[in-house]
Image 1 (cartoon, rainbow, N blue to C red):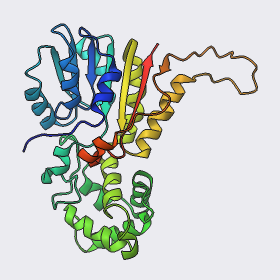
Image 2: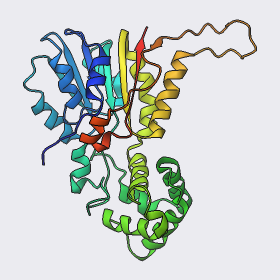
Image 3: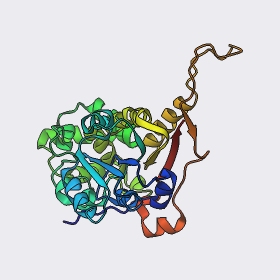
Length: 311
């Protein structure tokens, strides 16, 4: 199956990276190489792209898609939060910019065997790196009712989390829940018919929550924001595209902490802790997709791009 992913906020991301032809840039969520292609297009033979992805299929596809560019390429199977270790292994001291697109690729959503989609029946997997141990099947069949409800509530912001968890636990006593189709039917049964008639697909929030848990997405993101800022060269920019409020909140808060690092009590007339910001704002509000982009790619609807620059 072709690895495809329509790069959201592509123009805005590439423009905000301020790419120098001989610079070093990282795409921490390489996917099929969409944003990476935009970077490579602007690099000379002296420039370097570092492409990082947890998914081996993504690296293979991106490697093919990026062959036509002359810049140097370092493609690494790893988690983007390990950027410091990755650079150390590549013997690179700093980078001139980076982009993180936190959306799940169309390939992963549409490839039934990966188990990300509630629209196709498939094994309950949802691992971005298929070498990882934890799967959606493990989460659904072994987590306690309260723990499961907490995950669905916290990561999916699902109002019916407790009821969905109750139905899951009750059903798995009869037989293991091993497919996405089984899980979808359980969720539909748990959510009252009147609530199912409104809003998105009834399984959307629960599937999002389980996927986030399986891949530790929020934990990795929180670690990654500071790590990427730390490895930026002066003038380097970090562009992060988020797709739901939990991700965006983490990025916004971590950026704010770097912009205002002072730890002095508010009543102090002057700063005595000596902590100064090492970054500056690029724009006040996040960039969002145009109506035209949303029409062409409905998955872009909730996307936000935040950018920060190293001093």
